[in-house]
Length: 75
Image (cartoon, rainbow, N blue to C red):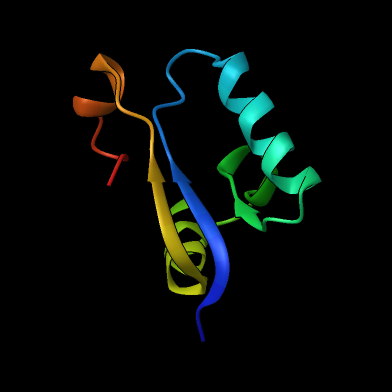
């Protein structure tokens, strides 16, 4: 079942401090966010956790950059 969660898709090739601020600000106002840095733990199946996050999310937020456009991980 999809929740009002927002799935964040981005390239992790470079650390993006602005993205972390956005994710934390969304959470502060009560918006549930799926963000790989917070939702994938050591030992987890990366594709499995991404699929779970997508299945549970109603909204999709993509951060476009030259790195994300060329990434096989960014959906």
